[in-house]
Image (cartoon, helix red, strand yellow):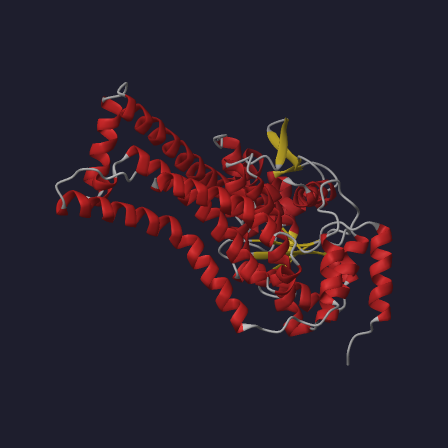
Length: 130
Length: 316
């Protein structure tokens, strides 16, 4: 059995509300952001600089964000784009990996287009009973 | 003697169950009974083999004296390895231990892998999902229509924006009811147990058929519950809506969705108490036979050892 490593531990924990918000702001930004820029974009929330710094550091440690040192400050950007991330997660849900040990249950399995058309016809012929 | 009887029972169950239950028309109208029979058959066959091995390894008299006697007999069998009788006992002991260990490990591994997969998946969903139209429902901003549930405490139903767009409000309610039936009925545990048996006994057709059938039957169960509340036609329409718009993926179980739609377009099966009672009785016999046989063997051995001078007990 594969033992979860340090990285996996982070990947197994859901992001909290603040982490999620910061991550979504990273996704929405056009360019990598410094901690200061992130604090500024979160104005009105009354968040301390150190709090935001910790959140960004966590996102980096958990593998959500990448950072590079520009001058004396880190600039953070998402590891992959939001759309791409969602596509990966959904592909994961469609893959057979979760099936093997009954980790999830999908509402429908695949049906060929011909079969779907045939069933639509059957449904149409048998209208909903009043 | 008793061991041979138990092995014969296990063989009979393993051969007969797939023929008697798999794909029978009545399983479509009584999915709950069919699931009980499948699990009963799995437990009965493996329980009989385990008991048979134990009876060979441990003399029934020792079995009757409880755990101390069993442990003592096992130690003796291993210590005297080489003597003809004890070698057979040691072999039986080893086979029993291997089978028991395989079943235990594969069950734990299956459940652990599922929990791990779900934890990863929920973590990955966390920043891209938002609360849905119901408390237990999460919406993901994705165009492909998909609905699935993640069992656990609490369970989650994940719905994509594409699915919300594709379904009417009534159909959405029916789909959510279907997923909640899975979550509340703990259907994933039934599937996980069957999957664990299949992993532990990869060559056994009974285990393979049982898993495939239980996967199909829990869908029928959930369809029936959704249909009872929101109308079977609505559930059928929701399946066609979502199946028709989901891009095909390679490993889908072909034909099950179509089968479900056809089934939902026929009236709900009437409740049959007599059939439920018969099903429960068969499950009880399946579960009790190996236990009762082993207990009887132990009981007779003790009786003949204490009540008569002759030590000609041919049991075991």
